[in-house]
Image (cartoon, rainbow, N blue to C red; front, side, top):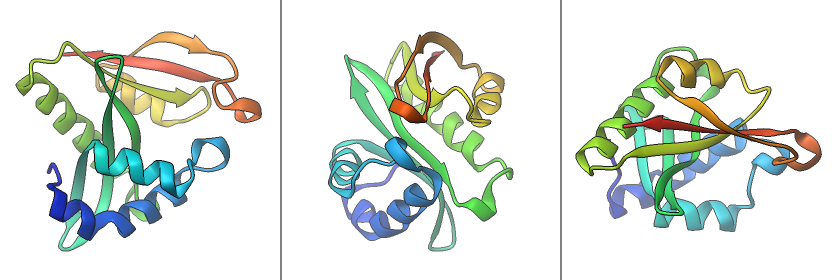
Length: 143
């Protein structure tokens, strides 16, 4: 589901906790940066009851929807939640007549396999994107 402003406020702390558990080092932006992207972006979330199991923040970079962050609670990984969120982002992009959606991922992140299965393709290798923590891949899914 896409979170409205009220639901964003209610779910903020849960999403930030999931974010901190999923990202480390340069991947994990300071809280004020997370807050800016979270409140200005479009937030997709999956719930069980009142608990957020996963979420994604979609921002706009150079006119293109860009997944700034996607994260799933550690104990819920491997259960299709990330894939479901990606599908919902794709549906949203299609409804909004977007041509593509982009994201950046570390070259050693196993989530790449999910992205490839969902139709994402590498469009650029970005050496040093994560500083000393590694290189990045800019990936795009055409809509």
